Length: 261
Image (cartoon, rainbow, N blue to C red; front, side, top):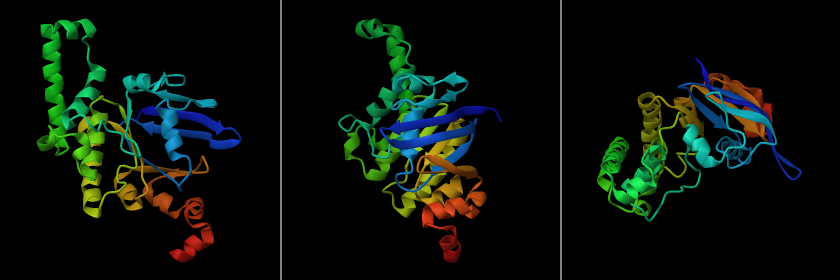
């Protein structure tokens, strides 16, 4: 399959600290890939590079052949990359529906004057946006909460809302940063099914950061492993589970990993 995302030799330093070093990754269109590593390994920093929060010192990032280097986060979102955050960043005082409607407006075509004059085209577009937002809420089991403030939702539902909001931008690439954080086992099981369903129904490529290894191994087709900003392994879940470098990164030494088995 053709590559949607190409990350080529990307590095980033903060002062004397090398946060990411010569990192490369290629994601096939429609793939579902995990990005794992110990705490502080550089995973969220990589997401920040992919979405324009940080700019790489060297290297190149391509999305569908389009160079993302130098672009601002809103420009990268418009190019087709959307993300969720490790710490939920909803618009807490807005309703659940409005959180999704705001994201839908990234693809709106009517300008400011159409909104001021409330033209027929503007009204039709707003009606279509509201309908699409409600359909997303239905998919995520949130339709009944459409009128509630986002901050009033239980934690697991806030996580689902954040994914729905990201999908409302019509991304080609969806970056999920620890979506299962804080969820109980039942919620994680539903999330696993939801991630697979989102990939299949929306034809979106997914890159997933997650510490829950059970979820990663069950839902991802391929996994990349980073440690101290360096990619130390990449392969299928079965290959990653047996990789000596991965065992050493998580357990200290390959010998201790073998003993633990």
